[in-house]
Structure formats: structure tokens, C-alpha cells
Amino acid sequence: MRKFLSNKYLLTVIRIVIGAVFIYASVNKLFNPADFAKAILRYDMAPLFVVNIMAIILPWVEFSVGILLISGIMKKPVSILAAISLIFFLIALISAYARGLDINCGCFSLEETSSKGDILQRIIEDFFMLAGIYIIYKFMGTKKELETINSVNNINEIK
Amino acid sequence: MKIFKQVLYILLAAVIIGLIANAVNPKGVPLVMDKNIYALDTAKKKEEKKLPDFRNDPYDTTANKQFNNVFNGTPNKEGFIEPENISGSLAKQLYDRNALFIDARTKPEFDSLHIKGAINISYEDFHNLPSEQRKEMMRKYNKDGIIIVYCKGGKCEVSIDLAYDIARLGFRSVSIYRGGIHEWKDSGYPVEP
Image 1 (cartoon, each protein chain N blue to C red):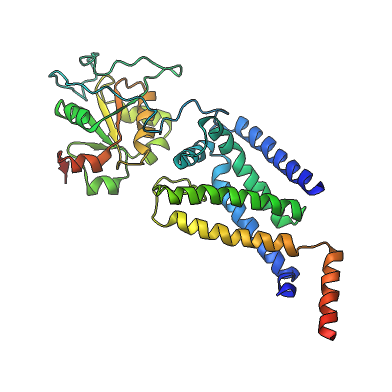
Image 2 (image 1 turned 45 degrees about the horizontal axis):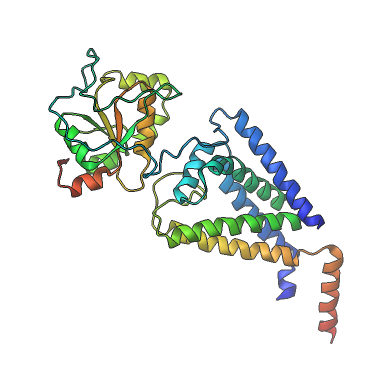
């Protein structure tokens, strides 16, 4: 399992997929802060004075994380940041779900009409992405670490 | 520790890019939201009262009269009179006085059920029009006439957005009926088809 998860092709695929999702999620919001602010308001969680700031900055955090994840620069800090954002979104989503809010999650599109199950589906997706990020963080070691893992595995195989 | 520094650097970069992008974006927003016009409890609500008898004329563009002080708001700092929220019973009273009801939903939604006599201006379509065309579209309506905008009810917001768009064009008596078509129908008030 450990060897499978440290497979560099698998890790690259996970990285690119999650990075693409982050970019995809951000593009609608990047230049449309007013609509995203409305989506944030619907959650009824953030105090009014931070709503616009969040609407201005969050999409760019998502976008940067996406770009950096795909490019593979600074993998560790980027995966930490990705995890923080995902946990942040999860808290909002779960809270909205628990309160039975009939809202669109505002994750990908900013349209108002809500489809039932939207929130729950996003929660599940977020958990999968969080798992992916954990795998990247945990197994995307430095070369040296990877060599150690490989040599340990080799030794086990020889035994 | 080095990792957390890098996390902060990435965050900082995103903050700076975001602020710059918002500053140059024509659709940018102020850093602090003035007030939440979408919240039910904080929004200004029209006081409940029994209205005197009068007849509103939505199409009388020559007259310039206020109706019995039902709506006499003062312009805000952007120069328009903000729409107010009204209850179902006030909406019905105004309905009986021939107020203009505007359904902000899409055409298919409007076609399936709407308040009897209401007209349909889909917010999505209207908002994407250039402002000249919006003005042209609304030219035939009385700027002092009573306009009530609604959507499906509950958490829907297109009525609020459309009401503000219309108020910005200089209409002085715009209000929002947040109960929407659902509450209207449940109250047994006239609907069509």
C-alpha cells in the first residue's frame, strides 16, 4: 500500500486532478466578487464586514493553490494550504447541511437556484479531495525520503 | 517552520493579487459590505397599516404624484430610493389598488404559475442588458407607480436584485414581496394560469 501510494505517477495524477478542481472552482468567482459575496451571505455564517473581503480573496487563494498544485512547486506548503481551505469549506458546508439551509453551495457556479443534494455531494467530494491532499502531503517526500522508502521496500522484498 | 512561512507567502500573494484584481475590476466590490440587503430581519420593512382607497396607475407616465404616503422614502447616498420589504397582507392591499407586480423569475417559471396580472422581467436577462436598454424597457412605466417585485419566495434573491436594479433607474416606489409566489398562492390570492 505504502509503495503504491508513493508511486510518483499516482501522486502526480492526484495533484493535477485536485489542482484542476481548485482552478475550475475559482474561475467563475475571480472576477465576480459581488455574486460570490452573495453566495457567502447565504451561508449566514460570516460577519457582514468580512463577507466582501472573503469574496475578493478566497477565489485567488483557490486559484493559486490550483496553479501551484499542478505546477508542482512548493508541494508541501501548497498541500497544507489546500487542506486548510478544504477544511474551511467543509465546516461551512456541514454547518449549512446541518441547519437544513436550502442553498446552492456556491462552490462551482454562483447561480441561485439550489438543487437538492448539492451540498451533501460537495461534502463528500471535499472529503475525497482532503484524502488526496493527505496522500500528497504524506507520500510526496523529498528524493532522499523516497529513496529510503524504496530501499526499505527493496530490503523487504529481498527478505 | 519554513513550510508555514511558505504557506504565509502564498496566502499573502493571493491577498495582494485579489485586492489588485478587485480594484481594477469594473464589477469590483467595496472592501466592506455596507449592509446585507438579503437578510430578512435586518432589511427595512414597510410598516403594516390599513391603506386608504386609491387606484395606482402603472402606465401613467405623465402624472407625478405620490400615493397617500404609502412610499415616501428618501434617496440614499447612491441617489436612488431603496426598495422596501412588504408583507403578504400589504402586498394584497396594494394588489387591490392596482399596483404593478413584477415576477423576477425565468420565463418558464413565470409561465407555469404567477400572480394574476403580473408581468415577467427575468432578473437574469434584465441584469445582463446594457443600461440604455434597461431604461428603454422601463420607459413605459410610471416612475411614481407602485411596483412590487417577487420571486418564488423563501430564500430566493432575484426579486431583491431586480428591485434594486429598477429602483436605480429612478423608480420611487419599488418594494419587494419576499413571501413570493408560494406564500401568495398559499394565502389563496389570485394566481394564473
